[in-house]
Length: 108
Image (cartoon, rainbow, N blue to C red):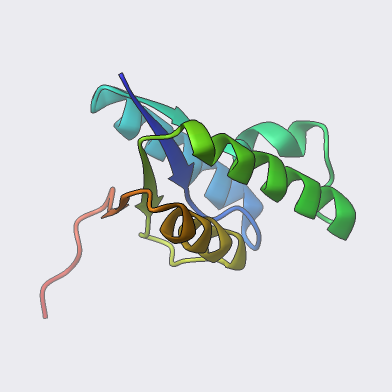
């Protein structure tokens, strides 16, 4: 299985974003990937409302990137600050970045 870092929004509408991240995880798994969604894992023990906790979770997620084959970015709800950090980190490490949508976009 291909190891991927999964980026999707967390902050803001947290309830909606957790549902979306779970849908993205399932999509990634069905593509034959082994995704890591640190923004679903670390808030279980760290508070997203505490800056130091949030940064610790982000840094822990970024550290896993060294093992990943790619970063996959689910963009249906935009790109958050945390997602942008993950994208920039992947770029610095030379890791491929793929943008994905779960929902079809409307044509003009």
